[in-house]
Image (cartoon, rainbow, N blue to C red; front, side, top):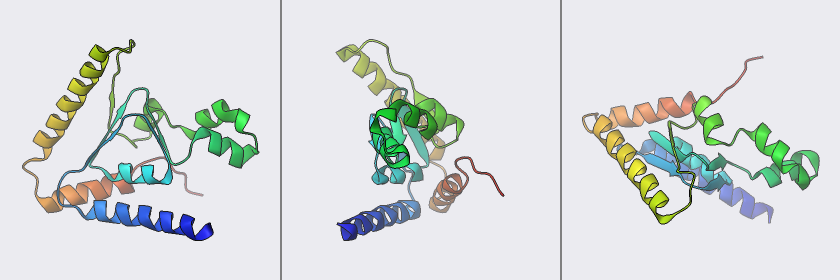
Length: 153
């Protein structure tokens, strides 16, 4: 079983490396629950959009609580500490834009969200269309290198 985890980690790292080398814009969209090591690769996008009620983390709150406290019932506390909401991740500069979602869950709501996503994708393409491939890749690299919050000792 241990070998499989290593293979997964290597596959994730390889995907991130390949994404970082692309000379075209990468737009990532978190629409639900991105909670696995593979979710890391989404952060390599030039633009990362996230639906207002989605979550994005490398581990589920249940998994975090089980590992940290050996108590999966502390899921809510874990979720707060993990900073996995769209609002938290926007403040940490992990994502670039929060896409608002209608309160009601109807087919019309889906169409509103799809229209907002389409608008943001078109806006990003327009912003990047005149940039050289090298600039696109460099901006993505710099964005990834500077994201998040850290403290020096």
